[in-house]
Image (cartoon, rainbow, N blue to C red):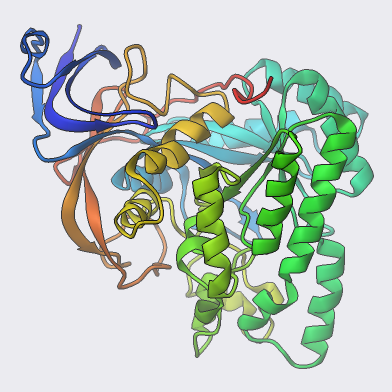
Length: 467
């Protein structure tokens, strides 16, 4: 059965254009666009018409950094693929790329199969996987080639978390050399974990156990040093590099310098670094634990450099690093020892709204909003133009967005499976009204009409920014 939907009267906003246009959707894909109230638009006929007058018509968001059901610190991230993707849809995100984990001593395939089993049949929206590489050896390197061929084209390594995910410089170099050959993209958690562990031990010995010390030991200089080292290792390997969750002025400077030198180096930041700070980590009565993530929140003065990086394209992507742990029973594991607080924040539902607020606040333009939240992550991770834009042939992942609706972000009203909001009480203007995933309504006028299992696994091509 063929199905046709037309979205009439909205302002279509993509990374490159803003146009008052009607959008024709046929069998789950964008079939055509025509300027509103023109003879061409009037020829569009459909089974279902959505009135978007006074609203934006946006490509669905692409969140390229989520951790559903991630095991960490003796517990698991509290969102399942079912709850997490449903919350993503509520926030106007229609594709996530989550991280499958290789455990030390196991194969990449073993880890990838485990994540497929968690996600399959449970997702409300489409999804792909990156691969966390924790154990670089000859077999792992061969497996990287096979994964690239089947659409897992990015590999994350950690310069932090010794004894868990950590890779040393030699392991990083070998993986980068392999990715230079097979077209994969290395994603790097850039913090000097060996040095940080020394500072953690010293802080705890001094009795500095509160959450705020998490931010103090994970120093901005150690993020910058690791970022610099990752860039140089990638340069030696002749490989591209994508640095995740950039939080510090000094790290942005390292990325800007590398890009000025013509290197294929990319950077991502997250809403928490743009809107929150060490003031949150210092909240009394252990409430600061809610904001423990790595890289950590920085003093407010770092935010200006992150916004500037997003405007100058020294940072290209805003993802969430969504990795929620409930305050009660999970974050509380670190009472009396900040190093035992599970690292991660909820945010997959808030990203598009917070970035729209940034448009209103004058930090970025409307098109740049769509670029950093939809188009660039799709291009960076081989999903474009299937995802990330509204153009003939693209998947009909479309958000009808009310730019005038006001809302207060709160755990009382969010859909993430976590008992607090990192942005509790924040007033923002702009709200998702209707969301289509491959032409199917997932959110319909602020009602959830999706289902677990609608979302399908989406293999990816290699990074579309490389020569």
